Length: 236
Image (tube, rainbow, N blue to C red; front, side, top):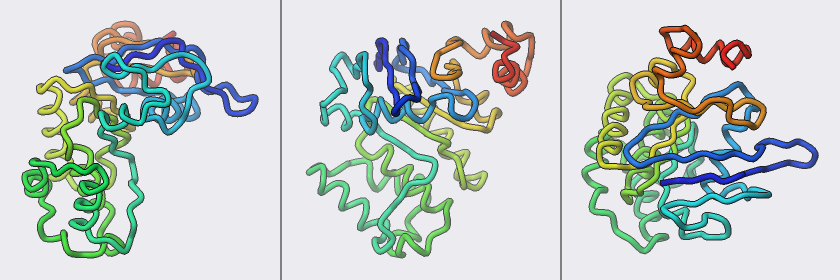
């Protein structure tokens, strides 16, 4: 479980997160949505420990995430566009990450096969397509079987086959009881994957509930239109 208690963050005079309280539960996929500059990226980076909140508490499995590097090891993070050393090959990168953690993953070869990376393992990362690099990112995300997954536009750049495989893997991890936090601009993807929506507006949570609840509250049967109403302030 990931628990946020009165989490606030400012950058200079700009207050980005304003006393957030939220719980992300095991076996549930939560879609974090909101307009640009609503605080989505800062929220995810705060959970990851890449941004240190000014106030409040973030707990992962009951342990504080603040000033606790070990909490990061419990999170698999898939960014929209991962930055890899271009001179490395995928297999070198995967082995390097395992060496850094001093941990060999029994999932490595199965994940390489699952995401169909074998033909690309010995090519420099700089020559790989964006979609293939995203497959490398997917393998890294699931490699150490973390209890928490943070997925930021995870299907960006993937072809339909790879996107389908990724979504199946995400749903499998949900069934295994993982905490999954997801962002995506593709509303059909959220409708397919998410159990609930957390809507951020100007650094505040203005809605957190199931997809059915947001549809009922806005009177819109389609998630895209329901979220659009919130963004326009008509669903509040």
